[in-house]
Amino acid sequence: MNWILNNVSTITDATWAHVWLALPAIVLSFVVAIPVAWFASRFRRSRFTLLLVAGLIYAIPSLPLFIVLPLILGTSVRSLVNVVAALGLYGVALMVRYAADALDAVSTDALLAATAMGYGPLRRFFGVQLPLAGPALLAGLRVVAVSTVSLVPVSALLGVNSLGMLLTDGFQRGILAEVASGIGATVVVAVAVDLGLVGLGRLLMPWERAAARRDARRTTVEDEQAVAA
Amino acid sequence: MNFLVAAWEWLADPVNASGPSGWGARTVEHLWYTALATVIACLIGIPLGYAVGHSHRFRTFIVSSTGAARALPTLGVVTLFGLLLGIGLEAPMLAFVLLALPSVLAGAYAGVEGAPRDAVDAARAMGMTEWQILFRVEAPLGMPLLLGGIRSATLQVLATATLAAYVGAGGLGRFLFLGLKTQNYAMMLASSLVVVGLAIAVDLAFEIVDRLVRRSFPTGVGAAV
Image (cartoon, rainbow over all chains, first blue to last red; front, side, top):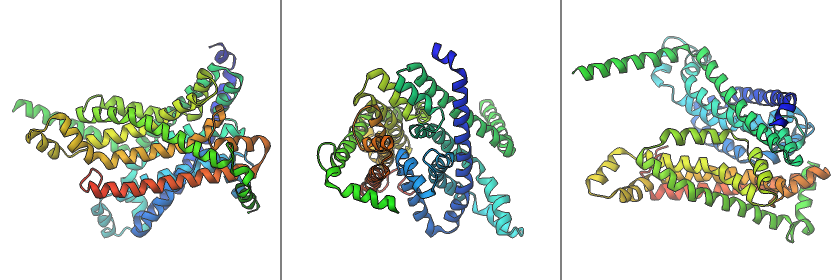
């Protein structure tokens, strides 16, 4: 406990460094995965290949990727660009599958109706398909976010500052409280990012809550009617 | 490109390949860790998942605890157990089992739970006992999902087994950490490529088994996907 109280500033610094590695990677995963998923769901034949490639990328162990990627990107092993790119690559690989499923699940009727109303392909995608796929996309992004946050610590093995530094430093110096606080703070960041995404979803998709409330009300009314009958 | 050539030369050099600390032996060790952790996770996860899936009890507990376990940083669990249990194989093995367990548990549970109600009711109406229902109806129907869970568990452990070397155990991670300390990029890249190759080979092996399983249980849960 003493270690934690004496090192509050170290923990907060590491937490912020952690957040600033994870957030860009999560945003990058989403922004890159959407067009790829659109391609996979628009051109059915490419779907199998794209998802297979995504699966193989996800199978690459993280520590080797952190080391190999700089050789391809031309950055140094400890560069933040390298870490964000590696985290983003995993995020994209995971997100593509969720996003392709989410876009596929949008009802064909809605898309045909939009076309019949004179929507062009671009407007139809951004105005109809993307918002309707929103809840499923959010569910996928939440998984990606949590896995990204819990992957960041591996970069500490290369000497990049994040909550992972508490794990490596604590292990080398034999301070149990430091390792435990590193694990705890990582979980806290994961939960915070997850809650942030849920909040963002409520803000961007207000109709979802309205629909849920309406459904809930309808069920209660039906239940009461059933009881009365 | 130079690095790739250097890595290839490193792999081809018999000094690095053979002997008890060569990459050949380390690869076997790496696969052994992976298999052991996955088997232990299966021994715990499959009965537990089947029990929950069959009885439809403690569902929320399983779903939320597997979700929480995924948020744990594996490096943290490895170092924590490393400090508690000391240098050796016990600490990383415990961490790997913990890492593999959620996927196995979720696969076993979802497969049994998702078995069509009609089939389960029909089996019960035919006079099957609960054990017969579980092992002759629900388990075969859930086989593809269970296999999917074991597959992702195995790949996760295979990828993470490099961390075992950080707390003094063996495996292909040895070369990664040695290379990091000595700035030997050829050694790091070479051993990374071996791990990536192993991951792809294991994934493909599972793909083949998956197709065989789906052929033997054509009406299984998720067969249409």
